[in-house]
Length: 203
Image (cartoon, rainbow, N blue to C red):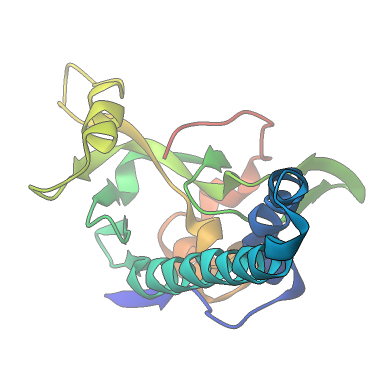
């Protein structure tokens, strides 16, 4: 079994994404400061700046935790992904249906092109991954929203498998052209013969 993990090096896109929510707090602070007496404004400005930096720091730490815990594993039998919630999705190669645009909980900077033209731009919660029927395991302490998400997934009555997707693009936005893509071609080269459709499926 071979493992692939997210690169934790910062990019411009990553920095902007992590800092942007902090920037959106600035108008809120300005409105609040406007109602404060002049003699206390300098202290409040310092407090607002410190709070903004602290909020950004929390997001950076969380992002690093996500990057460290998110791992894709490819074996001769299946492909699987584990995230920082402790959940794990697994697709046996024979049950993988296609490569498609899938939803994820981690942003992807990828722009997908088709025949030299921009076809689909993946957004904050989309990337390229695998779609099929597989297993979705959750830890005993999984948050309620994640349990509810799994409960909503369609189930194949014949096999009992759930309709799932594996967002490989969160590990490597260009995985089709890298080591992961090479591994998948060894097991399912037919998946690369179809084009990516502009539809999304929950991860």
